[in-house]
Image (tube, rainbow, N blue to C red; front, top):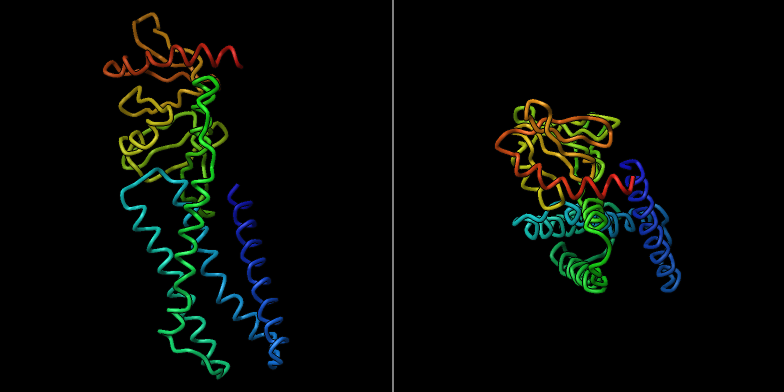
Length: 262
């Protein structure tokens, strides 16, 4: 998944750069300016790549759980793109000794771009049709989990993990283990913090060290000693802490629906 997202980002960035380069070449032909292909390509990259990076960063911010600092982070991304783009364009004018505007004038010329991005994002959000409150609660829960993505650092880069792929979460000190069926991922966050993030999308605390995804639960019962357990579709059985017995009771309707669908 991470590789696909990286390829898509590279393709979009290259596409915008080529479009900008074509525009610069066409502009040079119209005004009979001396064409310089390396300068044109460098100018195209300087004019587009920072903004493509900012757009990708804004998309990743939207995929994260809502946080009070998100608007400030989004503004910081746009300001960083503005500064980088202006600096690159100013450097190019020095390298090619071209008559151009000052750095302040370049920044002023670029200012409409971040404002345009804000307007476009607002229009895209406004144009999305409101979701009809249809389908079973399980289906709506699954849709909400598809949208919730966790960025998990690994040795090979950041891995995007959808909440619906996580069966349960196990505490490991200041870390947690995300059990996804085919692998176990380690993430630096406390179980309490993750419980607050994922509790809105169907994750339930059943033990002081366990957080369970209700979509993967098929049964909640008591063993012959009175101890509660929850059974997952993968066959795993997880203990229920005494103080979390009421939480486990919420699995009963979900488990019945899941067993009928699977």
